[in-house]
Length: 325
Length: 172
Image 1 (cartoon, chains in turn orange, brown):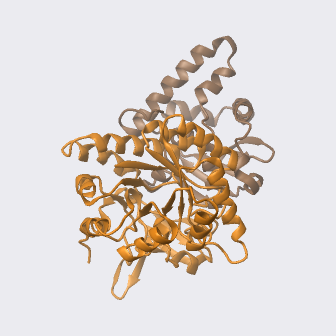
Image 2 (cartoon, helix red, strand yellow):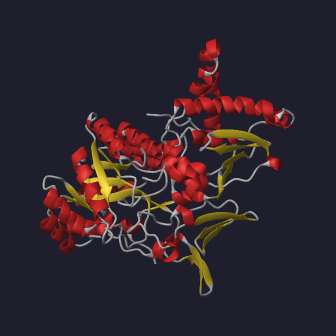
Image 3 (tube, chains in turn brown, purple):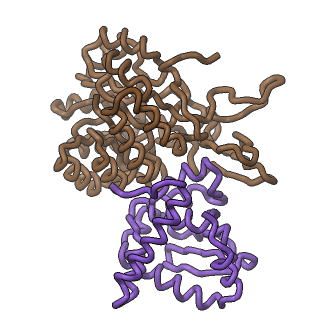
């Protein structure tokens, strides 16, 4: 299985390549990708240099252009695809069907991957994307069990990539409007979930209070690990209870299930975290590379090193092993 | 790793102007070595960034648009747009991109307040720059450069090792 690694900056890109990535995915410094955070991402020149660096080491570069085009502004997304193709991207990762149509029409030789943001989670959806846009790979939403993936793999003529480690999204990828509801900006249209411009962390006594726009997201007592300020990870009062209404602030880690994923027909494992620093990228990629080649008995000790880097400093197998309420 | 009192206490008595002079020389060296350091900030370059080491009686104010760094006693800290607070070793490790900012934030070892967008932009800009303080300090030290570099690297190894309670993170 390939190891697909994130990079938000050229320095992180080099770290991912040197640490053992088979492919690095990244995006342009604008709203065409779902990690459009301040100070992050690549200029065209930076991407050209990064691709050359990767190619010299037999590593592929995937360019995420995985937000949805805005009516009247399609040129920004078209240009991103044109530039990624011209710069030699090994694949573009797309979510918008209109952009997929543009890509297959203008750049028929460009390899096209379906972003998790397209939310293609059943055989009919994937088959349509393969037939209509010659998609070569689909990144599955984090909603399926390993058994679901195995069943799906038998019904489609397309490679499967799944998330193996990193931040978890609420189970409606590409369709989540929580951030948009609170701030007017969303990962789907603007490339930002919980934009930093709307985030505030406020000390209140020994507690840490996180706020997004006009909403209080969470209150962390002293000693409790903090999480991202997203509504999906918010702790709310519901009836008589206070708790996480959508999901807990934990990170995904399915490295205990590598053999099962391989047997299910998965071609590539993806690490989430283009918004994270190069230290995270270097550590996670090198540990994951070692974990992929290690035996099942050595693997837990290797991967446990990564808990400290995780949101909430806790990990979960998420939907892959569906046991929640 | 909290700095020992033997190191931090004297800073309450050393004149700010003396500390500032050293800090400004290092800052100028870093800017010269990394001319693109603040390019990623875009409009956020005009903001004022405060860094408050929780184990020191002083704080630092960085104004990228000038560019300028100033040193202040904490009780007289000037207004800032965004502020980061944590142990000095953590702040320096972040400056060099040796630790992941989100991870130390999750663990509550780091506090960020004010303009989060500006601080995030600065964090990402620093992370891309590959600053190496022992190397930059050595460049300022003339014939003593090799000694200064080795000493600074040794201190960094030990400090980071204590922070992570194991082998300090290394580059690939």
